[in-house]
Length: 128
Image (tube, rainbow, N blue to C red; front, side):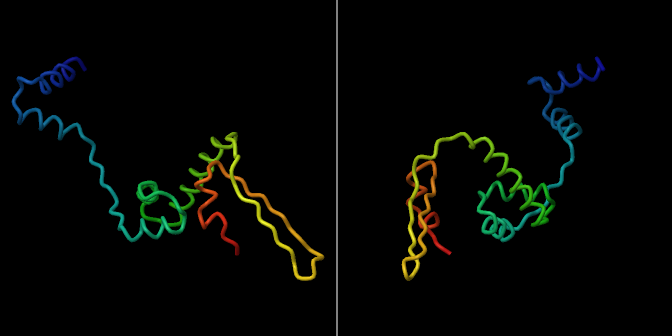
């Protein structure tokens, strides 16, 4: 082990020849093949989950290109992130009302969020 360590120190010293340094680097670097993920797959997963582009690419790479497994991984990651944010204050939001025809049925709903920027987005106010 001592000789290997001495060789590594010698190989990475600035005085060592460049060819020997690169040979040691090539021998010690693990051979990792990255799965090629198409941009269209990343876009499809992003539209499906609403996650960021790099998160989608990382999830697809970990799942080996399997869209469902990547979506599950992103969902699990999102639940973990939501757990961290559970104690944050939600002081912004909207209040919506609905009164059915005839006036016998009415509903008032308050939906809160952390910032007013989110509350002003059309997706936040969207009704189905």
